Amino acid sequence: MSLLAIGINHNTASVAVREKISFMPETMSASLKAVLGLSGVQESVILSTCNRSEIYCYSDDADRSTEAVIVWLAAQHKIQEDELRACLYVHSEEQAVSHISEVASGLDSMVLGEPQILGQLKSAYAVAQEHHSVGAHLNYMFQHSFKVAKQVRTETAIGENAVSIAFAAVSLSARIFSDFASCRALLVGAGETIDLVARHLREKGVTQITVANRTLARAEVLAKEFNARACLLSDIPDELPHADIVISSTASQLPLIGKGMVERALKQRKHKPIFMVDIAVPRDIESEVADLSDVFLYTVDDLRSVIEDSKRQRAKAAVEARLIIDQQTASFITNLNARSASDAIKLIRSNADSIRQRELDKAIRALAAGGDPSVVSKQLAHNITNKLMHAPTVALRSAHEQGDSAASDWALRLFDIDG
Image (cartoon, rainbow, N blue to C red):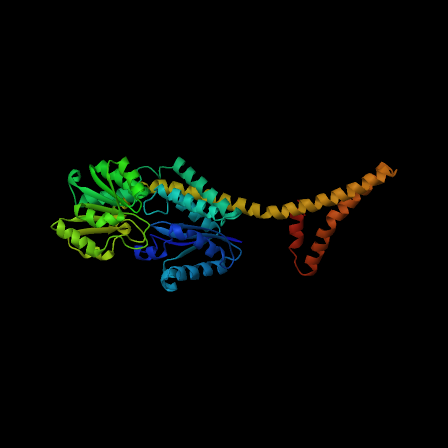
């Protein structure tokens, strides 16, 4: 039986590959069901963010399940297996436990120590629970990762001065604009990332913000919080000519902003530059938009330079965090091994208790029939001892007959006898 973590992230795959392997919320139920149907897979959780897509599994055959997951991923997302394998990582057992703890703690994030990933991991776990794809083993591993993440954030400075993807996106705009007070921003989407973007823009002095979303009600909730305007995604062509800053983060499967739309906006703007950041995976803005001379388009992969400074500041905290993760992973594996013996221990104790009860019933009947208590007691002790030792004795003799010379050592250890 094995715990597995199979996936890609910002360190192993470009955004062009990551957007192919992303999972949409509306297809998560079918995806979880499909993974559970793969060879050997008994439990599964799927985590999909702009920077990673990972499948966590509990399997009765690690090699068989790993291969099945890879083949399914390639077919499901219409990507060549060779291309997928080139950027895929596979962790099993202790490595899988350590990996998920690093993910939960923000150590495996593009933004070292960022807190959003823990919420995303908890959400992925909750969705898997809702669809009954989580059992005792993944439940144990995920709860462990949540506990470790809390300890890391409590005992280290990993989360101090954290730079989020949203902050990095807004910071990049300073390369283009010196006066934020006169800038107009169009934010596409209304999720947590766009919420953070809006906060950072307001801190920079941007007061003219429009929020575009598929659902107007959700856009209005966010817009009200920041004294902004709300509109629908279908209104983007009309809003784009007025936007100096465009930051997009939706779960759309297809680009929302195309090259032609931006060209038309630039003409109306008389080629006044537009700063655009596409945080979404799959991308919301067509990559060809970057070819336009008056557009500065960045993707999540372009935010690394802003983030590197933050990484260096928290490098020491990361070392301390990894020590915690190593210690807790070792403890988890020890406890997991002990848990794996619990079923056998329960069976052994149940068998012993059945023998004890049967022999006790015989003794009670013998006493009720007038038997000598001393004789009955001795017979009771003799019978229990004989029946408890019969099966182990036969098994030990058989092991030696088959050439297993180490059986005696195990037997002596089992009964705590100094040989």
